[in-house]
Image (cartoon, rainbow, N blue to C red; front, side):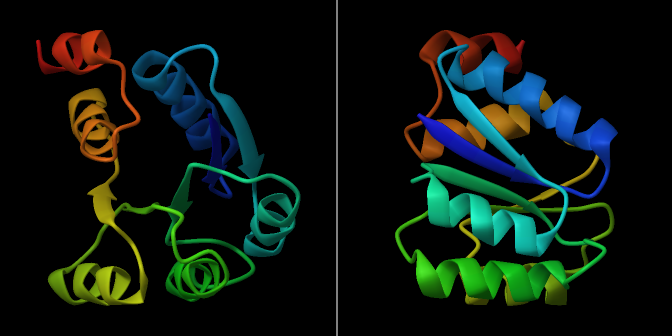
Length: 131
């Protein structure tokens, strides 16, 4: 299983990587990108099963990246992350192709729930995150 995590904050990328390993398993191949342009290059090279995209990137608006990714890879599930999403932004992200929108700080249980809904989580990870 291959996943892409996009965030311009290295600390968040590290936290996302650990959360993915905890929920999906150590066999997950995690690709990271600090920019939207880098994310598109990664997706050109690797067929990913999930893309997790922060909506606040330095080179492109996260919503624009969601739209571009969804246009090129419409079957790729996208999860949008934001540290301050209002209802309008959630609706816009969903209309542009995001399957889910999550707020930072991201909890293990909400991430496990999303992965479970997408069929990507290990059952024991979902149970332990709920505790």
